[in-house]
Length: 435
Image (spheres, rainbow, N blue to C red):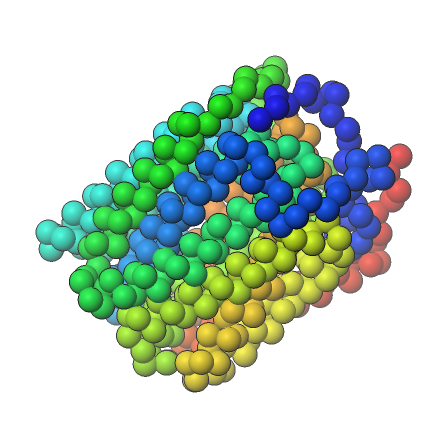
């Protein structure tokens, strides 16, 4: 990989308001380079394949964990608590994680976080194998995993450009999503089969082993020394710089706000999947895994579409249309009692969600100066960390009193209305021309 030029020598990329306009300015075009353009970089190849293996294990872990908790307790509220515990630490630590990513080598941070995550997976496997597992232990492990994620996510997001190049950034972000959702396609179905045939514990053990792939890939990279930007003030002030940047950048603020609403009311449906599978569709472990895999298939398709035609894709259909498609399919899913239709609705809905997520993430990252990227992605992680636990608790509590289908339908409706309100606001308040 070629060393990154100094920040002041890089061409400025004009990224317009999400309502429309080109991603790249005429002075810095983003030519068509193929669906897998980012894989021409050796470092990104190592990251791509390592992540694919590791994330298959992660999805096996998450699938098994949800089923284990519901099997032990039968509590929908506890499903929400576990999901919240896994992301709540990001509310406190993600800004600090973003600051570290801007001040220290990102690869070193990622090796450390992946190693700790591997150890947590092995501990959970041992607890289940030994028969000593209790719900409170799962909550503790989920919380520790959230601490790891608070430092891992900002560094991971900001490291992409160092593994590739600015011109391949959008393609790499979309390919990252395709890796996540390719693993989401394989992991849950594999976990369902293993749980039905062998048991739950092997899913956690396989997850632990899978981290070796990404750690090995990171250690084999040849990452050149990059310029570390000097900063004044305290470490706390440095960390808060990302929050200040987001607050004063209109387009980034709008995208992150919509991302937050969708995170609370939309993504929380995943917390209720064990309940929906067992109580509404009356299916077992294998069927539950296939439901999650159907969602992964749709998201994978959305990620590949973005990787292929992202620079040519109009932002308004991708951002707002993606949310509306997701909301419509989630609403239909909440009413269905047919297993085949449920998988279809989840797949199409996940396709829409991925169009929204990949396009939004790219717009945010290409709007941010290199020296701010880690901290801004720390804010992204902060929103993710805040919205997921809030949404998980909201979904768990609402499902307890109103039922799982009604909770999913309510979340879908809120997502659709939020996208509509944002779209109307942008139309009535267009961005001023950039001077």
